[in-house]
Image (cartoon, rainbow, N blue to C red; front, side, top):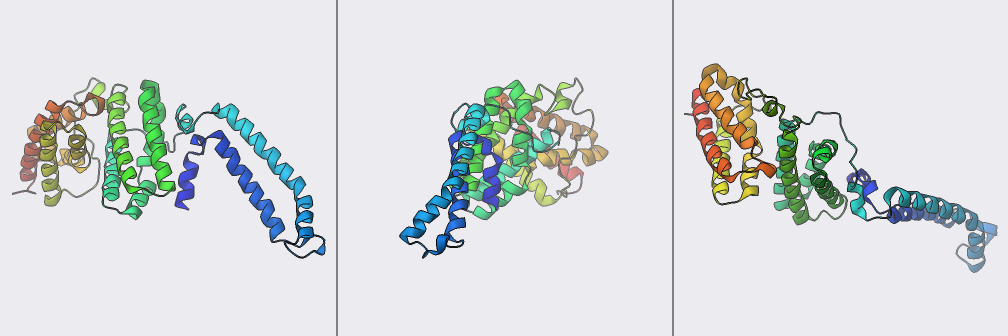
Length: 326
């Protein structure tokens, strides 16, 4: 059932001939089964020569109907798709799946889900890969973000679309885990790039481009997860890793280390931290915003290296100020 759903997600990305072929095969199978397993024509022995000739005579009108229907579908598909390849599905905008707003927090959360999918693929966990694809918001976002991204960067939107379709085909097909891991990573990079593109439109990060200091008010919490010692320690370690990877010129690795709970925690802790140490909260906010403004196509290795290390130190101080770390 999951595979069937995945195939239907992008029926428009298939070739027109493929669509017509599928329709034709379905109709032929229906008619063939109706005669092969139905009553025996003219009382002859099933599958005998006379039976076969009678079967063909009885089937011809139905086969003709199926053929005409398939030709109509093919002509319509050719006119709609211009007879091009599977990539044609990305020449125009994908239909949005939800009415949810495209926020920076949503993009970050879904990038985290794609990171989890890549990790599951790397570890050989096929069931978790399927579960994450169908239960996370990441797939929905890739549809919802297509039109606003296409308005600003058509090539970037088309690239994202093509990677998404390739991933869907993998989920619907043999589920080749190495390919899924690669495609998940590519989509993460595409979404990071989309963040940079959409930031200038006030869609992804409206507080940054509205002329208002983004740190004058508490950052909105991204999750409702508990502010635990383990969570702080893990985020601090990953921020330090992001800094080290940036210094080693590993852009994808640095961004992947930052995206996810290290980013989420810095948002989640902002409100509670302001109540006990407002200056520390503002400093942490400014460091995180500096990183956020230099992701995707605006990536700056020096900013990531410096600010990720700084954020790790400030997060350590925040944990102590809140009594969570010692």
